Length: 97
Image (cartoon, rainbow, N blue to C red; front, top):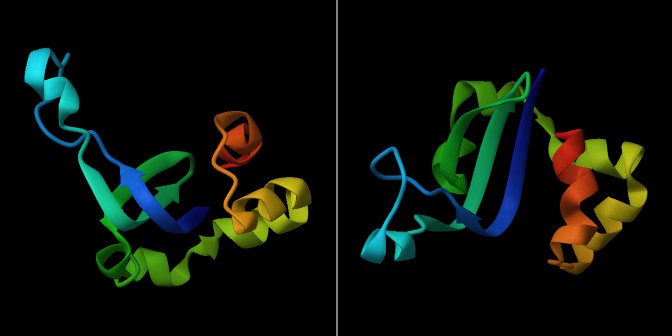
């Protein structure tokens, strides 16, 4: 099953060299504005700018993460829609995905 998570104001990617980060590298978070994530069977396929991710063939066939959470987790969906950013509030949605 492929899921598309979109509508992220900021997406933290940590792109760059693999391995532990030290010193100044700790500040390079790879933040993407207006991001999206494409997930298949629990594995992240792509993450980046929504404009690019939403054009991928797999994204066109993917289910929307928001519609899943609205059915399975209505409280989480309401929190996401209203802009709640607390990790405690969003953890259920992340587990579902």
